[in-house]
Amino acid sequence: MAEDPPLAVDIDGTLSREDRSIDSRVMDVLREWDAPVVIATGKALPYPIALCQFVGVEECVVAENGGVAYVDDELVYFGDRRAADQVAAEFEDAGHDLGWGDADLTNRWRETELAVRRDRPLDVLSEIAERHGLHVVDTGFAYHVKSDGMSKGDALPAVAERLGVDVAEFAAVGDSANDVELFETVGESYAVGNADEHAKAAAGEVLAETYGDGFLAAVERIRSPQ
Ligand SMILES: O=C(O)COP(=O)(O)O
Ligand SMILES: [Mg+2]
Image 1 (cartoon, rainbow, N blue to C red):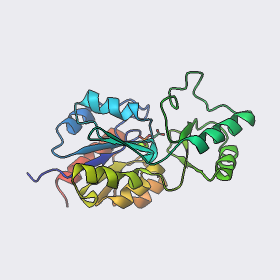
Image 2 (cartoon, protein in one colour; image 1 turned 90 degrees about the horizontal axis):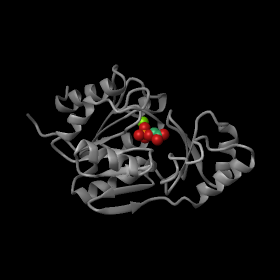
Image 3 (cartoon, rainbow, N blue to C red; image 1 turned 135 degrees about the vertical axis):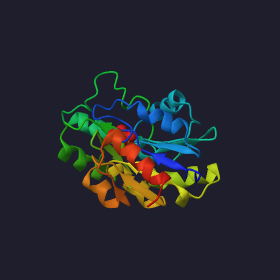
Image 4 (cartoon, rainbow, N blue to C red; image 1 turned 90 degrees about the vertical axis):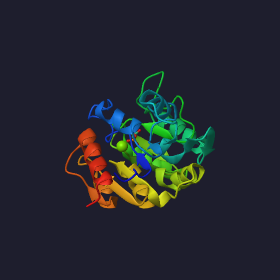
């Protein structure tokens, strides 16, 4: 069997079921992957780090939509949270909260951007974000307020370099607008069947299968190219 290529994979909507729980079948696939695995996610850093630990792979992640990466015991920052914090303050002054309760586990450990629940008003959030030079990306799971040049795809080359692999060797699997730049950066890209229109348009191939089934179908394609 040919060697696996390096893999960059999204979490929510790709390794998860619709309810955001991890599809347990994907865990052994990642654990046995015969090349570097980069978990590339919109989630705050501790979540993908924990996923790597629980799966049993090297901790290697792009978190917060490319705001921060962790590879080979190094944290690499591509964003800072000050402008996003100003957006949060103005959004709250306008009478809205971020939507995650008092403890706010979604943003508590987030260092470079801001996530807002999708039932909050997008028009108000976008208007405030734009005034601060930021924009909103909708992942299907949250609205993320971040700077333009910050994305999973913009962060991956720095990770690839530290891993000693060419970024074009990567295969990527994802499901939403925050995976578009990732798909544009790697050599081979797959959108799962539940992906949004942005991810589907950017992907090299769109799978019929959804969520974890979609990821497993992408793995089949990656391992036996047509
Ligand atoms: O945190 C989100 O909103 C989405 O996370 P994901 O990039 O792993 O799908
Ligand atoms: Mg996703």
